[in-house]
Length: 584
Image: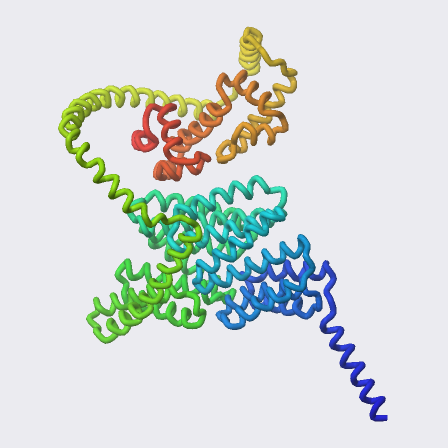
């Protein structure tokens, strides 16, 4: 009897265990995978629930992904020990997965999660190492979505260690890459990618300004990208709130403290409602910073202390905690309270040394792996400088004589050119104002339209046409071009001959021919003229637009850089963008 009972118990327990460790179907696996990805930023606990649910499978592929995801999730919650254990388990289960494309892709996922965990710990060089390994695997199998993730994460590493220009370059290239591969993404995923890229571009410009506070135009660029991020983030609350918080920082830098204060209070309310202590910590620090700047020291102390308390809870707001104690020490020094000033200065100094030492070490490691820093460059510059010193000294006397003559010549020429440019600019402004008034008042009468069309037809017949296109087809191309103009498509950086030809479903030869025939210019000249005319019109009608820097205006109409934009603008108007804005 005992033997029978034991057998029954064994059978029941074995059945229960088998049910607990049954394999998920592929559909169930993909659904859980997506739920983990959707929740790991917004709700870590929910993401962990889904990851643990996946880890109950007996399929090695499912176990590898589940433990890879938990690597990052436990690190977000501050549990480094468990995070590292899960990463080791993920690699262990991965080894048992049969060789296939799926295995390579899965390995890239695990490297990405491992890199995110290292990034969260502040180990930027270790994170970069994992991203680079994962990138190679994704390129090997042509996994565009994963390539986008790795490229975005590598850009964040560059920003974190102070390589702001490189981060900006990376992100702009990534933005073009995402646009070219738009068809691979769902509409929602595409908007999410664009939102993330624009948030990160704004952040890179903002941090670049912090290190170069004399370059005010960087703030305009940061504001531009944060606003674009908000537009892309209508369905992504986390991205939208991050962009708004960052926009508050820009208002703060620009001295618009009321707008910044309102923005930060909105963030405080949102983070309290959604239980996001990390975000709440940042918002409280920023409010303290505003009140310190405006000399409301008692109010500033309230928010700095809240920031400290939250940093103790999150264990991840190290920079906010550090800066908060810096300002508290300054406030207590101003209030002549030596004990408290000493206390907070000690906290700052004790933490700053460790933080800065680690950051410097990570920056060196990252730059070494990227090949960014050439440590011999400074010595080469010095050597070249002294190599030519003797020759330069001999040439200085001749140079000074030529310089004086040149300056006198340029002054005379500049006065003449300036007078010509102002005449051209004033005529141009009057022309645009007349066009605006004409559009607002009335359309051309039908009889006048017929006369114009007849004149155009006579003109076209006289042209020496070497390429024959059906007139209906030609008109269709012009019609589609005008439709793109109405949608302001020409403001995009990728408004090129191949892009537009593809967009309106024709070839580049026909498009180039039609533009040349109908508009009397090359496609490049046509595109540039549309952009410059848009800027001129905005400057005349929108006083806020005149306040933007040349760099920000250039980027707003799709120019690659401010230099090429300014050159095209001067060619059209005879003056620089700044001179034009000042004389309206």
